[in-house]
Length: 165
Length: 391
Image 1 (cartoon, rainbow over the protein chains, first blue to last red):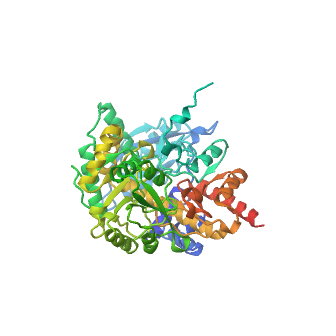
Image 2 (image 1 turned 90 degrees about the horizontal axis):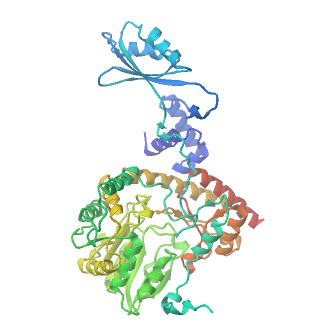
Image 3 (image 1 turned 180 degrees about the vertical axis):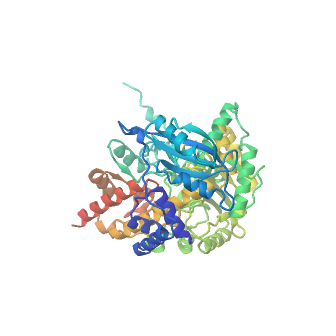
């Protein structure tokens, strides 16, 4: 992958809505070249989609909780952790699963409407899996920063004087 | 009757012209929703680690003066930085001084070297303060204009034509504010030859050196035989987004730096201590944040260059800094009239090229140190404005 391709990825990672024309100008390629590069990223599964970062706490009437669950499991001979992970990430309420180093094995992020809904998922679906040894559930109380974006920060807050030498 | 206090003002101060930028500042300040491309500073906030280090120094009670020339630790880091980045060697003990912005370094350098009537070459269009700083130091500023057809690059023969027996120094800003022009090694070498031939000194303003987008930056001081003839001036404002901290430095021959330190100790004492501790962190943490900002400026430079080309406004693609200097001659307006009408009609603030010297007439300075969202909107408005003028 060349430098400009990396640059395209970085721009898209920051702003998935940036249009091809603008990207082309910024990295000094033609629109066709940028289009081709993006198609290639999609095909190679380097780009997995274009989602939007939403602060749901700002949406009135929206209910939702997120929990980070530390899961200890017994790896399966010949298959390691992958099978267990799949058994977990197939559940739609599971938003993220990571294999971790350290005191536990899988970090599982679960979203639900209420705490009891998440609790039910943990006790009924997650803990009952054969390979799961134990779980520790942490509910997120407040998100300050997510994927590099600080929530509640005004990006139009320019403190500079309008004209300077 | 009230006392006429203006008669107390010294004649040479009274004679200074106020900067043309002031008028646009006043005008833009009265208006709402202005998109400003008139700002001569980064749109980034200082990297957090630098802010945090400065906090920490305050918490620890480091609130006293430092050595006149600045914290030795900071001078050592500046010396290391200049060596690794530009291959120039300066002793931190007596060849480096930490100043209140690069602006103060220019001021004390001029005051340290000029006798009344000494001439200083100023390469225009350029930063608005040079000529006044020369006058205040008792010198005579001599302008050498550069031309768009040469990419606003100083031509050796034009420089030589301006030299007289009274010429003592040249102020060279590379990369340049307001044109964004960057001189490479091949373009600097003939200038260095003239400097040697005519026994001159160079005040090399390298404040934008970290923001160069094409070739590797060459410090004037690194050219053959030039280290003894160069006062290298730079600072933290542009590369580390630290304009408000007012922290710069100069590096040069020990005798000259010591002469500057003499002025500095009697007039300033030392640069702000908390800012110096921030700068220590800036240099220690290295180049990751600088690299990130440089990349972002380069992308925006590419964007505005193509936007102006599309509008039919001729422009040189800037090699450095965060300014672009397109020609507005097509519109038939003076740069001042253009900037004023653009501000009033489309609420976009730019700086008329004429404030940077006569040779800047017919051009406008646009800073692209602003968000892509703002830049996109500003380009749309300028395009609409230009089309209206040509209709």
